[in-house]
Image (cartoon, rainbow, N blue to C red):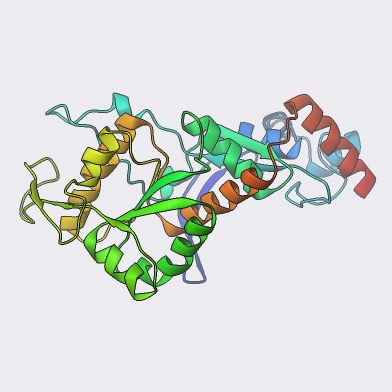
Length: 295
């Protein structure tokens, strides 16, 4: 194999899995080239034509040593975010498709954020993905599966510290209450388990709820950000309705705890210190100087 190869990995429970490997370039190439300052496509084409890596290190196309993956002190951090035109995708009956992604598509990205550290870079990626980016105040709706509920208290406390008001379904609110954290209860949307996500929904009113479900609150503009991790088939159908409403409202929404924790880091960073503005050209020049200084 000479040239570029695209490998997709998944990491789970301390085990690294190879999903697929393709002997070709991918959309990751321009992202990686901009992030590292290395012209990967040009280097790969020359290698396919017979040049060696040693030749390219000698002529300056590749770094004198290493693979370009090291982070140097003072170097900018780049974050790639998945952006797909979900509003344009429709089911045969005209419904919005679900945004839940598998590991292959989670690595698909069309926007990127640069900044001095990961939190600010992640915040920029969300600014490119959502109109207005991440909120720094307002209302957050939370509904997580049973596995993720053990991480819920710390997340809720951080949200309160950042000045957000919490909204939750009855089950999630009950977990929060056990830890002394209050939230506004919303009605849960449910569908019959034996039907598909597009079936008519039945609303069950929860005790102490505000009398509306989260879809209604989203449509009224009362929710600013969403954490919704899917569970069983029934709750996944609930989540489908929530995520479809959030797509229509262009709200930041997260379906994994890991990404939501990254969002909290980003919000905290932006509240305390604004973005650093730097062009791609300035970034490349700075990266070139840092790398040459290192070697």
